[in-house]
Amino acid sequence: MSPGDYGKLSSFADRVEAQTLEARRANLAWVAVSLVDGHPICDLPYLQADTLEYHLMEGTTQSLRLPYDHLPVNWEQATLPGGVAYILTQDEHPIWGGILMDVQMDLADAAFDLKVDTIETYLERPGTGDLEYRQKPQTWIVADIVQRAAITGMRNCLVARYGDSTVLRDRSYKDTDDKSVLSAIQELANVQNGPEWGHWWELTDKGTYRCVIEAKDHYGSVEPVTDFTLSQMTSFRWELDASGTTLANRVRAVSTADGDVRPTSSWYSFYDPDRPVWPLSFTPSTSIKDPATLDSHAARMLASRCKGAESRDMGMDLLTAPRLGVEWMPGDMVRWDVTGAGSRMRDGETEGVSRVIGYRIGFQGSWTLTPILPGGDKEYE
Image (cartoon, rainbow, N blue to C red; front, side, top):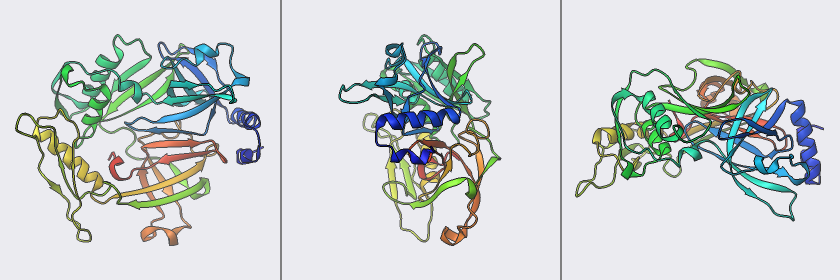
């Protein structure tokens, strides 16, 4: 039975058996690990997911199901919210991981309903405390914040790393600001030429797992590392979007008032002869007092939104696509080619080079791997 036949199965039990069998054929496997030290708790061959998603520098939430008829012996330890991570591997190589945050049980149902979040949900909890940085490499600042506030003394299996950077930054964090680690490193990443960061799970030589959070000036390759071709694709979708605040060609950044003064950037503008002015005033952080920092946020926002969001969404067969984590990673540059569909493409553009900023794995119908390409406020370039 192929993955595309799942919709013909009438019962949840039949779908579980079919998906589990196909996962074994594809060398896909789930493992539950301790969030404290990364040691494996048990395999979860019958764990079910409809979709899994990953983005650079932002979290995602997924829904999984664990059938009552296939619980491991130590299922209580393997379903401890806040204490367990679920990791999907292919050929024993981790390709996705998240923290179990919620378990729901209904005796009338056939499975536990599980809510699983990527590591960013953990980084939302610890505050930065009092930290001061003067003319420090921006990648080191990200790693130091994570290390000091989210790893040291926190009894978890996280690891912080950073690449070299010649970009020096000043940052000051106060415990009284109640700023989380996540908001601090996101704010730093959102300034013009700011650092980038992402995370992945890896298997250590000791047989344990750890979540690596790494900061770099540019996360991923600068040259294409693989090709996505029309013959590999199950779908291709193109969109040009100006809705909401996606399009903004005049931008300023503001903070909250400091007494009678509200820190504000200059207005940054992009002249578009074919469009009227679309203004945007936004607050990157309520604790920013330095207008120069706000200027940097405004410049970055304008660069990402001045032309709206042009996005391409290409689905590929999970089992035959270039291997995630082996041939490419989020952040890498890739070539795409949809030659043969030129008459339906804007300006006849049928091939190009783009950066991958995330991915989506779908297990409904045909199993698909969808690289997420930049668009609008997710340029990261």
